[in-house]
Length: 244
Ligand code: ADP
Ligand code: MG
Image 1 (cartoon, rainbow, N blue to C red):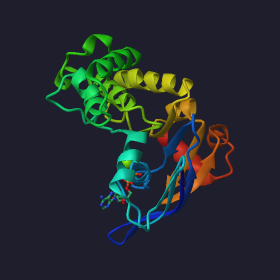
Image 2: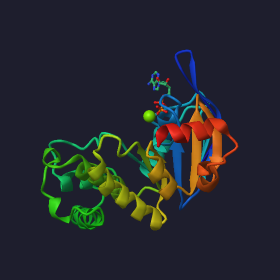
Image 3: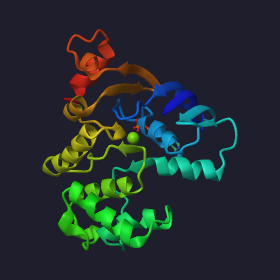
Image 4: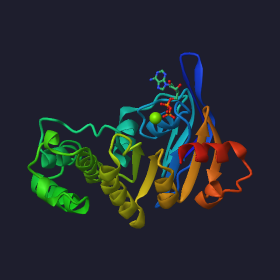
């Protein structure tokens, strides 16, 4: 998927300034940068939770022009293709873990319930929570809740998974359980876009790093070059050392 000439303003603040970005299929793209730089706005644009004033969004054969009205059909299609995982999990509190995972597939994709349950159980296995199908969100640790949220996103068979600071609400030992699941997904070539402040994790998982500052892309390239202690860009060197 690809963004071209994206501009977004909130009030009179330019939050995204003519952004051009490519998110390669089968790869993990990691977005880093200071707070308030526009990372969440970028990720939310990919999921159409944010609508820029202008710019183009290319997703497979679908081409959107943000200067024109986006139809509901286009919105529904792209939301299903780009599963979002939020920092605070956003699970349905009155539904069990299984209920949370089968909700989208049965209600939106109109999958047969038995089939949806079988898939959900496989996904729970994958995220290391096979025994938690009947648990309720309040009975889970933060790390478990976030892994359910990832399973729920995967159940919609998205092409991309978008994760906005997926572990920043978690203690380090719980964080690890989530990072392991994401590293496994990356090994399986799941297309992902992840915003994170965890530089060790970013270095480990990224096929591509994007550094956002003040609504602009200051770096778009390989993690090796980005994390190189001799990176010629002093702004990047300072950022990395302030984060680690
Ligand atoms: P990041 O995720 O990098 O911390 P954001 O994309 O959340 O940055 O925010 C970028 C800028 O846009 C910030 O100045 C933020 O205050 C502003 N912003 C984000 N969302 C909104 C909104 N819904 N209304 C007004 N301003 C917003
Ligand atoms: Mg953010």
